[in-house]
Length: 333
Ligand code: SF4
Image: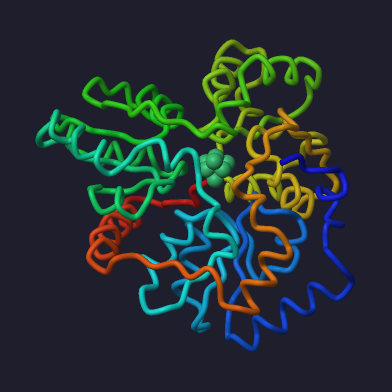
């Protein structure tokens, strides 16, 4: 799907009064509206809370509302259900998947574990509930290094599913007994080092905000290491971390290496900064399946409800709670 300039500008509401109708129907349903940072601007603007996947799941667990409408992709809604098993969790379109979460199945994980008996399994939060249930400890992009560092040095580690985040952790800890699954997100993998280098050279004063799932994360660290871009201008951040960094930044311009929906929250957080996408085509088709009309249908009809098997949910919850116990988990994607 192509994200048009109008959509990026937040004018993608289907008709005047749409937002009021959504809010009224949500109120009648005692529902809270949560939107991920990569959602369409109109969805972000109508939501009660906008943020990264983990922050939203925590809000889902804490709010009084009996129903959570999760405008994001399916694994995020599943995580909210895992952390709030007694609440009704809705996603406006259950087909909104994730190429990264789909890059490892639970059967593939079981076979990998069988090859490495005794290894500790560390999974990024972009995984299905079934994979989380086979995981020892989850991590986010913010605390992946801390999570792996917390594991005894003589234990093998299986890190999944993202190869770029895994490479970042392995390089940081210089850990030889860490195996990384070769998964990737098609959107983030499309933001490559060549584009980042070209943009950094064209905008020599700009800061770089880079999500560690990006194919260009290695290039960003190289640019900093080689002095092409001063190291203090390169920031490897989760999406929630980007919003905090935008508020604290004194830069005039920032190059952003992640999904383009992120620009909406960054521009709201720091309107005086010129935010530019490293790759303007980096738009997640799955995230954009949550259209304004799908959200309207969801609050009107109570669709699509997310179910997680209680046994899987209990095992997945243990892995998520172990993650929360290690340092600051930050926000994930
Ligand atoms: S941007 Fe990539 S990792 Fe994020 S939801 Fe889309 S496919 Fe998944």
